[in-house]
Length: 410
Image (cartoon, rainbow, N blue to C red; front, side):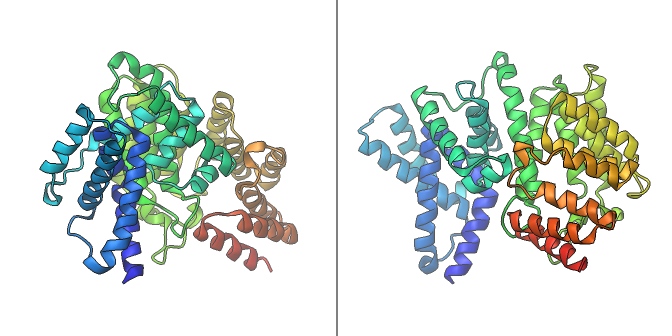
């Protein structure tokens, strides 16, 4: 029973955690407090639900308990102001059956976490923590930085928002430009974690990817003239179109070359291509999201891996690398080069990245290097690289795939 309750609590938090925290942030006006009382409610659920049973509306139960905890905090602080009275009034008027998740609250939470009073690094770390519900370890893996660095950023961000008394509300239209780049960035990172989880026993976290897509659609409605908002939505739609084919029935990842393309979501591909066309129609030249969406479109329209326009993808990656230099972009370019010009050419690009700071401690570089060495027939070296990559992989499903590939080379 206890294990079942743990699974239920985990599932509820994955699905509704962001909305619960967003609702609490709205009524308390304090993002840090909202997250604290939400986690206290989770602890109380783990204590009560094994004996009392799982409530009919678990998300409502958690929100109500967390609100009570927030009231207690304000009482202890002796803050008898309008914020306390509003909290108490909402608590009296709210019951489990009245739970109505307000979608815009999540966007307000993202906007608050992306307030310009915070550094870009703190904005990203805080948003990933409170919106996606990732642990600090998972955030660190995703950002390719040490765990203590992420912890420090999140703690500092919460204190800064509280000290600056940043309101939990949508900014005025004139304030959008200073926040939009950060908002788009964190939405994309949330989607990225949903697309390929950095840790855990699931390869795809559909609830995270779905929330990122929802936010992307809301954003394009709010800022219809922002090219990169449409481009980001295009990228997410095109990438999400492959979800059904990316995982086997037992949860094992299915790599691009082995995917059944008849299972790709043609409606999502059409939506993605239409969003990219809208971005291009604004006529300001392609930014980083548009270039990535164009790469995803090359894959989406290709009948097979062999018939993919790899030369075009190489050119797009070269443009992306100049616009937004990143070792992961270069690693992806290496893969494209290997498909267009052969594994030896790709390996030369990979080897040039051996000392790239952003790839240290990541499984990405040795996994790509192992694949290319295997294609060149350098079996022993390839196996060694794949074993190294498996040891570094944080996701259990990814690790199993790398171990299986290494075993096949024996």
